[in-house]
Structure formats: C-alpha cells, structure tokens
Image 1 (tube, rainbow, N blue to C red):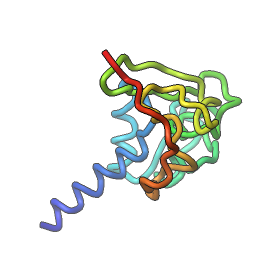
Image 2 (image 1 turned 120 degrees about the vertical axis):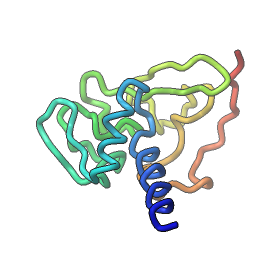
Image 3 (image 1 turned 30 degrees about the horizontal axis):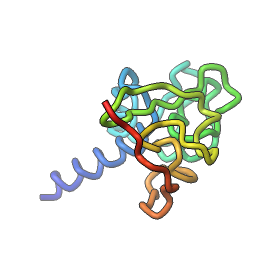
Image 4 (image 1 turned 180 degrees about the vertical axis):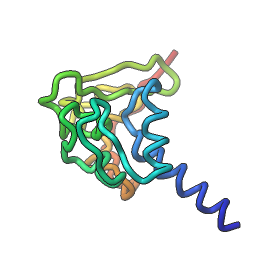
Length: 132
C-alpha cells in the first residue's frame, strides 16, 4: 500500500509540474517528478521540482513555467491548450491567467500558480466552448 500511495503521489506531482506543457515535453517533466529535480531544457540550470509552475521564471528558456505567464518575456515561452473535445493549440505564455479565455477548455485561466496547491475554487469562470 505504501508503494502504491507513493506512485499515486508521484503521478499527481508530475501532472502538476507538466500542466501547460506540450505532449512532446511530458517525459522531461515526468523524469523531474521521479527524481524531485527539474533540469532546464537548455541545460543551464537545475532546480527542485517545486520550482516548476511556481509563477517565477527560473530557467532562461522558460521551461520551468509551462503553466504560468511568469516567463512571458522569454522567446518561445508557450502554453499548450489540450482543449479536450476539440483541437489542441499553443498560445503565448503571456496569455495565461490574463482574464481572457484563449483555450476553449479555459485551461489557460486557472488563476495563480498551479504547483501542488491548486484548488477548484481558483479556476476562473469561463465557459467550455470546445466542440469537434
């Protein structure tokens, strides 16, 4: 039971860390969750996993903030809209938590940092407009 609980906790941590990340980069966030350390994609920095999606841009390439707007000034900083029920799309990080629902599933408007302490009541009220 303890091992199963640890596996569930690790999966939840990986999901939080990977929020806003593209499917192509998911393995990197899963590895970070497994080892408790995140290495910036450009190789110029390594931080505790808790630094991922904490609303502070630690990595020069912005890779530690896939789910926030903290790295909005960084070239290539984007947010991946899964848009369940519709087509996925990529938006600029500057459009995350800006009060405008850019993703049809409203995932870009979750409110504040999303690390390990997101609560349902933090999600901004946007209509889910995803349709295939």
